[in-house]
Length: 197
Image 1 (spheres, rainbow, N blue to C red):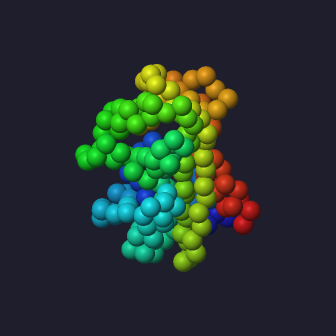
Image 2: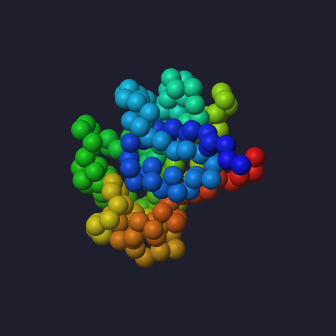
Image 3: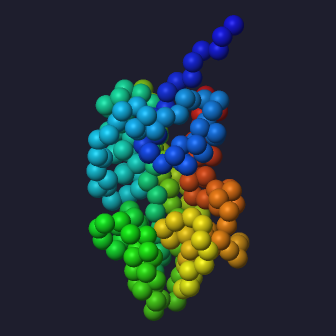
């Protein structure tokens, strides 16, 4: 007896690393495809003022056009001393075009005279299926250091040390980082939801 085909889940990304990771985690529940794999090439604006808002914009856009289940995320860094900045502007903190190095240098400059270096990476994961919307949040607390360390990861990883650890995200292997990252925590909540059905 053949098993029924898995339902399609379109993820609002073309990042092959992220897609491979999600395929591994969701293999028992969905056939996971990226946007280009299903022919979606539209530019999606991300103009909400919250991570959840941006994730929902992406998920609604794709789900509405393709009439299928969709998963989207929006992530960024939030610093207490900067009233939550860079926040939803994390990828463009130093302006356009996106420049990880420029963003990191602007962050260090903005925090230079602040004694409070507490920060958190935040992810909001939006899931839409059959017209119903769900949001799963994940975050990891840490500290910003003045001198970047490490060559792995991207963005603010070289200056972020998660609480309880001595290494920056950029000094960790991808496996170490993914085990405790904000995205991993949001995906864990999503998996609990899916497996409880």
